Length: 229
Image (cartoon, rainbow, N blue to C red):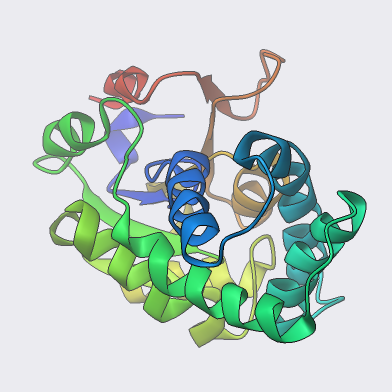
């Protein structure tokens, strides 16, 4: 990566800047009280977190739609925990979760500080597989929105990362060529490989196990992005 040629940085939102798991846990804590769910939150989250990841993969691959994602990721967890509830409650709780989630604003450590450091030097953009309205509120409520010149979301483009179309669209609206841009995200498949496939540079944030790759950079903390300066 030749730093002198880099003009734009593209960030993922969830699990990269916005601490999805922390905010999701807080949202469920609120909903468990509201709906009087008779389960321990920790036990629920232990099953829900990997289950949600699996359902998002199915959604990203086009195997399920948005409504099925929202319903089944809850229904299957309640079933596995042998907790009896109605479909009506699950649908209601699924909608309430989407409304409640953006109210929590935890970011990963150093998120604002690194954006402050990078913004004078690069155009900052967002590419997210999340839903447009939800992602907008997350960014607005957490103070991220002013940092980004463009926000490309999969629901508007009609394609999800790692599909080349969403990256090419984001590059076009950002007015940069692939070799002038770096994608920064937590997903090796969706963010890193998706970016590399269109000729962008890539940074893998918080890899589970360092691989010391040749074709992309790995970081465990956001402040490590100072290597770009």
